[in-house]
Length: 211
Image 1 (cartoon, helix red, strand yellow):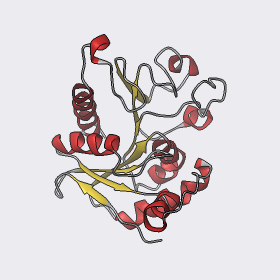
Image 2 (cartoon, one colour):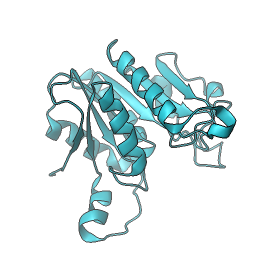
Image 3 (cartoon, one colour):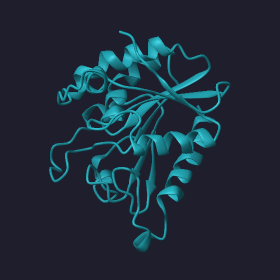
């Protein structure tokens, strides 16, 4: 497996974030570009990569749909190996990327290869299907985790998620009126997308310093 990484942020950062994309958009989507820029502004190094089905869309013009998330677990582990980060490494991603990371995080953490898990908009359930939860493995998660979620995210709102009984070791940053890309409606919330991304990045930076 040979990966192309997209780096943002200082090379000498104390912490590197290895982030994967969501199911339908590439590693350089507007949402991921904006998040990476905000995180880099806080002195974090962001490394992005693409799962093979998404890379094929870029190189071959393929329109293969995303596979089941769990089938991508080996690819995320391979990305950790290929990146070969020195210093503190946190894995995660946007939506499906964060979900895949969450399924391999405990094994990597137990091996001392990562320090934490970061999810940007976790897909707790498919939109409009609140009973199809993707939380079973989260209830036993051992790795330090931070989930940044918009309060109106259709994949899991601030009214739904607290009822899931997730362990206290999973920290949450709730961004008021944010959607699945963490974007708020300024006319309703008073916040801009840039405001929420800045808050997210500052929170992530402070959290990584505790790992």
